[in-house]
Amino acid sequence: MKVLMLSSESVPFSKSGGLADVVGDLSARLANLSCDVRVMLPAYNMTPENAGEFASKITVRILGGEHEMEIRQQKIGKLIFYFLIDPVFCNRRGIYGDTSFEPYPDNFRRFMLLNKAAMAFCLQIGWMPDIFHCHDWTAGLLPYFISKDTTGAF
Image 1 (spheres, rainbow, N blue to C red):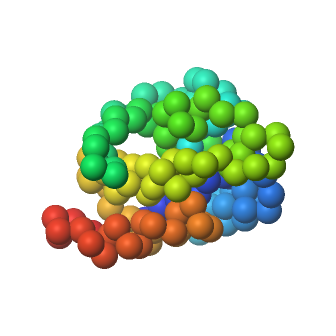
Image 2: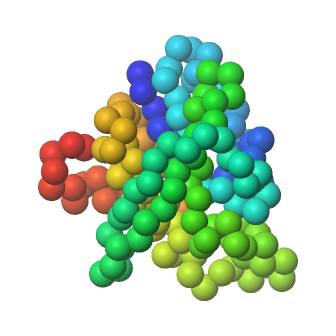
Image 3: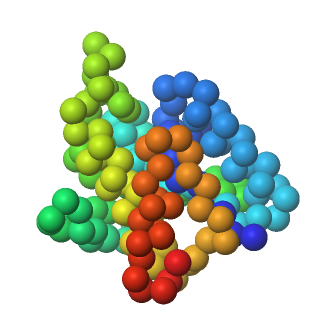
């Protein structure tokens, strides 16, 4: 079974709460059960700039425009992690907000990019998961985008 874990955080790379622990642990356990598990998440400042080897450049349509992003990959044990490299994620002090605990005003756009990137990347590399596991609100748009897909790929 092929599973894509879409999340805003996962140990050992980024963590603000329990979500990172769940994503990391569940992914590892499923991989140990012979599932092909891949985790896609943003590369934040706390993620090393060298987030692995270059995987792809993708372009997504969002809010009336096109947005190009880079994806890098890193294999740890049986897991493949995909990191979305983009200034909206990498040039910030925190995952969801700055140190004052105020959320970034563009979080909707930032995480919409993550959701769109997951679809575009799977299509580009020809790897279609049996399950898209969407973790928390930051991955909540992916099922909607899949339901509106007109390519027939999803």
